[in-house]
Length: 216
Image (cartoon, rainbow, N blue to C red):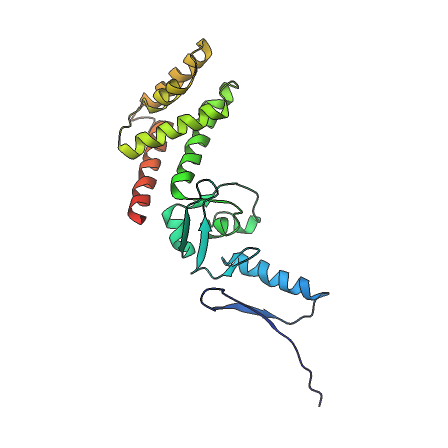
């Protein structure tokens, strides 16, 4: 009968000491490889893994990459509050579609307010920027700020996009045409065809603002 001493590596939460469900014997080529594999699998199970912190899904510590706001809460509450990836990047295919995994793989996070602003900029870029290469990033950012301010104060209508762009740009014939396009999209509503793109977007932004205010 032979007895052999085996070392096992266990990952625990830095905050509560919760043990990760898996443990590994050092059977790999190197000790570093085994530890790295354990960290990788923990992150795929929604643990927060950084260079300085390893926390279970109940103890996430995040900081907005844009405004510096911090939060300490469960991963589920972060998702509900509207925290999002500030720097989209490819994810493992098996994790796509799961909001928890999507946030777990994010490198830079944005708070609910900043993520709304990023979404406004993305939507404006999709609708307007592709047709007008002269619309600078500063214009886009300023227009998004004006739109977010309007939503937060409740002063919104179908002409919001046109007003936001008109307030930050120098008028040219091409720019005026694009603003007219934005206004037409916001005003168009045909019950037979369904809602316009702006109205769908408007409803989504209002819903997210309500959820953010409730979470706060």
